[in-house]
Figure 1 (tube, rainbow, N blue to C red):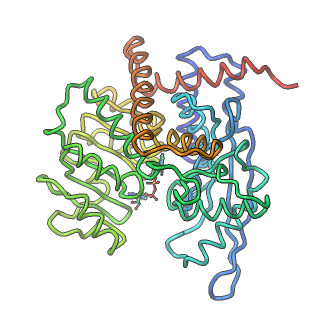
Figure 2 (cartoon, rainbow, N blue to C red):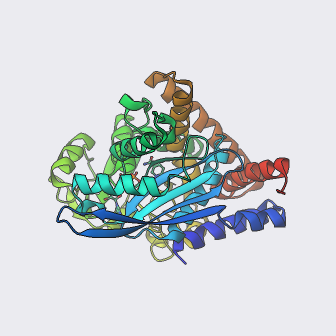
Length: 413
Ligand code: NAD
């Protein structure tokens, strides 16, 4: 069993006990609703055929169509995808958007592929999961190593099979084919709003808050920019190749320019080289893990020096680390709350596609900020009222709403 799936189950079990969840519903929630495993044969540029394994998991559709990203990564496993799908279910319910939870992934090393290979892989994977997806069934979005170009290919593959354009089949598309203004930066902006809400409670001033960010991709890279623009001091960033540290502050625009050339932030001049382990343990006030699962564990939790952790990634903190950080007074804004800006603006995109009526970026950002502030407030109020961690309160709220939907619908047949 992967650690992510163990973590997801252990979080569900803890929340079920805390909220005295009905035992039968608890049993239902421990299993994904349906799982599709596909083989994805791809003609490579050298003429050979490689076969990749892909998955799409629906954890729940009780509250609406399944929703969740697609990940391309060599470490993708079915257990990991199951965990990510379960977290999507709780996240959508927590922020009150009418979706269930899904996730997909292909076990592939995407940075080794040419553009043509990537397109053929994407179109074949999309056609293999075709019976699962659709605007009313399941709406994929970008995740690690997938982007708006990949979403455009999936939208096109689906549409060619229908015989007409169906923009609402995926979110995170280019604006030219029905994408939303503000979607690209939505997850990072949501991470910023979550940090600001937590800092208000902790009475932490922006100017003296030193930020370290793990992962410099769609979430972490843009987070560095929006935190910098909001007046924070970004002291450390990293990606899969390593990181850089400068206590006087890093310039995200210069970092982004360097990364575009070097494909990594490692080696950026004017800063000290650090490892990913060192990044997590930096002398900073706010840590934003925005890379992958299982980064803050029982092994390094004692050495984390940040006072506040805002989880941009899904599942970056294991349950053991979560408890030990809490015991040391570290405040954690959990993934299902902190990174929910992405799926929230995905929801706005889907609504705009269905109505064929598009909003301004201002409207998107305003509605995102209001929704995230309201979700934070309801989770933080419950946490304070019951004297529990923000994660437990957020999970209980999300799971509670899914339970309500199940009870209202009844058990079929
Ligand atoms: P991405 O592929 O754009 O970027 C991932 C970044 O993490 C890259 O900089 C990569 O080098 C780095 N990385 C990968 N493995 C690493 C490792 N072992 N150690 C250190 N760095 C590593 O992916 P993304 O979309 O930014 O997603 C990052 C995380 O955020 C994932 O957990 C994803 O599930 C989560 N998330 C993404 C979105 C979204 O809208 N893209 C929304 C919610 C949550």
